Image (cartoon, rainbow, N blue to C red; front, side, top):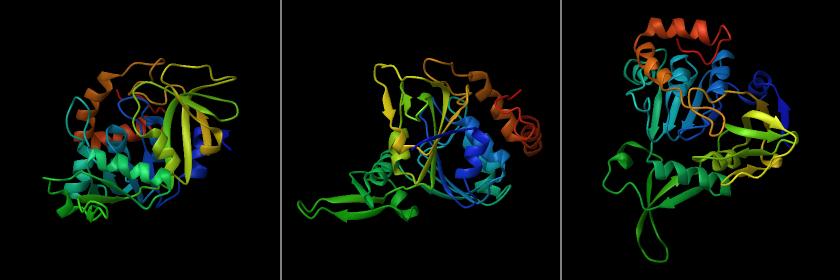
Length: 274
């Protein structure tokens, strides 16, 4: 059953050096505060998993937390490249970064397989791409019933999945709504999970289109208002477009990025970018 905790205590207990860690959220509800807490606690040699790595992964990679990235697309949404990510791949700064690239459909199916307790997923995908030639976790498979040539990808079972949601009740049941990605599947596939929420309430009232992760499926919950900033939390906050634009200049320069880390993460002022 889920336990209520502070963010710092939850990260300290759940995220260990060498873990496979998924921070999921699509366009909104991205667990940025949790990512910065992982940086603050100086976790190392992590395998980071995310369908769409954006600036929170740029920060984690630039801070030296990552040894490998498993992903399907990476960029600063609406702005351009992830410069700390590029620096790690191209120049091994601050350390070398291995990459494992998939399609969106491949990553989503990998999470579904992990959540379903299956060893792999099968899909009609990757046809016409060169990804199977560079990614060892993409394999052809023949349907035993039709003979059709398909593609198999292994399940993803993170050591810990971290997501952000709108709210949880005091028993640890989590409610999220709006534009969703693979948060549910990523939590169900994980060995441990942390959900940061905008607020903890006495009762989860119905919301159209909302899903509920029951307390038995979640390890820990932390109340972190604004924990998705600069992404948005539907019904609670708006996207901070200026942050994304400012990040491009900060992340281009190693010294400026290092200064930002010291001033806005290690100095406990997470969330600011100015």
